[in-house]
Length: 410
Picture (cartoon, helix red, strand yellow):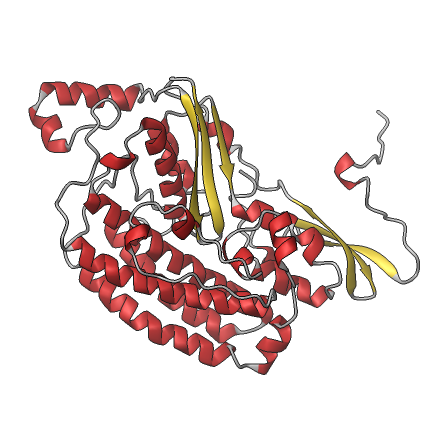
C-alpha cells in the first residue's frame, strides 16, 4: 500500500516552509497548561508567534448525537461532562431549554428557583476559584494555587452535602430540583461566603500588586471590543474587552431579575484586566447568595412543577395513588413527548453564554440537539490573540481565557 503525506484541508494554509529565522512548533496536545487535549500549531520568528492554528477534537465524545438518542431526563447527567468544572451550569441550561419547550417555565416552584440560583452562583465561585488556581500556577504562583483549591474544596463540600457529588452534580431536574436543602446547609453556606470575602482579599494581596504577576499579565493577550464581538466572545472575555453584557441582566432567568448585583466590566482588554474581573465576579456571587438566603426562608416547600403530562408526581403520591405510579412508570421507561417545535435558551455560565438548541418532532427523543459552548469560540479567538505574543506568554493567554475542552469536543 502506498502511503502519502497529504495533510488534511484544515492545515493546507499553513506554510511549513521556513527561512533561518522561523520555525513551526507544536504546543500540545498534552501540554499541562491547556487543561485538556488541544494542539496549537505555532509559527515562530525567534520567540514571537506570527501564526497560530488551534487543532481540537482529541477529546470528542459525540455528546450532541448522544442527546438525540436519549430521552430528555436520561441525557441530563451527560451534560455534567461538558464543562466539568461547572456541572450545575450545564444541568440548568439543558433543563431550562426543555422547560421552555414544554411550556412549564412558569410552573417551576419558587423554592426550586431559589435553590437552583443558589447552586448556579456557588458553582460560579467554584469555577472561578479553579480558574484562578490553575492560571496562577501556570504563570508561576504556587501559593495561590493551594489557597484557591482549599476554598474550592469547602464549596464542593456544600455541593456534596446537597446532591452527594462533588464534580458531576446532576443537581437540577427538568421542572425543578430533586431535593430540598438539608438541615444546616444554609448556615454552612452563610459561614462560607462570609469567609470568602477575606480570602479574595488575600488572593489580591498576593497577586494584584505583585510585580512579577503584573509583568506577566499586563498588556498580554490583548482583546479589543471589535475582536471580541467578531469572534462571538461572551462572559468575562467579552466584559474584559469593555462590553457590559451579561445574560443574567439582558435576558433574566430564574430569580436574577429580583436580585441586586452589578456586572463587572473593564476596557483594558488584557489578561490583567480579566483577572481583576474574575475576582469581582466572585464578590458579586457572594452578594447574590446573601440575598437568596433570605429569599429561601420565605418560600413554600414545593420543589417540582405540577405538569403530570411531563413531570412525575411527588414520591408520596406515587406510593399512594395508582395513577401517579403508572404515569411515573411511563415517563421513566418511555420518556415525555414534548410539543413539536424548537427552542434556544441562553444562560450565563461561568465562562460565557451556554445555550441549548432543541428541535422537537413530538417524540421522546430530540430530533436535533445543539450546544452553544463559550469555550469553543474562545479557542477560535486564539488565532488572532496569539499573533505577536511571545512563546512564554502563550501559556498565560491560554490559561487566562478559561477554556475547558469538555465543552469544545462535545
